Image (cartoon, rainbow, N blue to C red; front, top):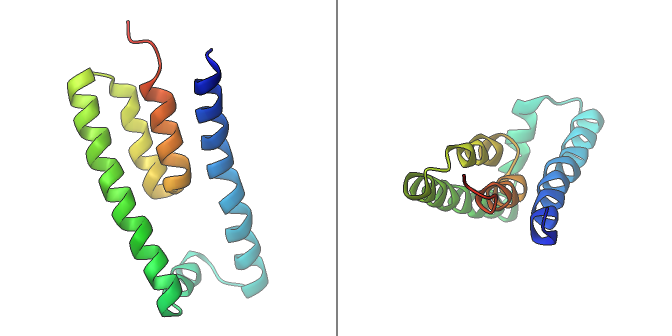
Amino acid sequence: MPPLRIAYLALAIWGAVHPMIYYARWMRENEGGFGGLIGAWHANFATAGLVLDLLIAAIALTLWIVVETWVRKNWIALLAIPATFLVGVSCGLPLFLFLRTRPIV
C-alpha cells in the first residue's frame, strides 16, 4: 500500500478514536447521554458556530463523495458518508480519501 494511503487510513482512525475519547469523558463527567452532548454543542455562540462550521463541511464533503462516486463508480467510497455524520468530518474525509485512492479494477 502506498504511503499516502497509509497516511489517509491512519488519519481516519485517529479522527474516529481521538474525538470519541473527549465525548466519552464529557458524558462520564456530566452524567449526560447523547442528548446532553447535543445540548452542550449549543451551549454558547462559539460551540454553536463550530457545530455549524462542521455541519457545512460535512454537507460539502457528502456532495463531493456522491459526485465522485457516481463518476468513478467506486461505490465503496459511499461508506464515508455515514462515517462523516455518525463519527465526524475528521474521520469521514480521510476515510473517503483512503477509499478514493484505492486501485479500481
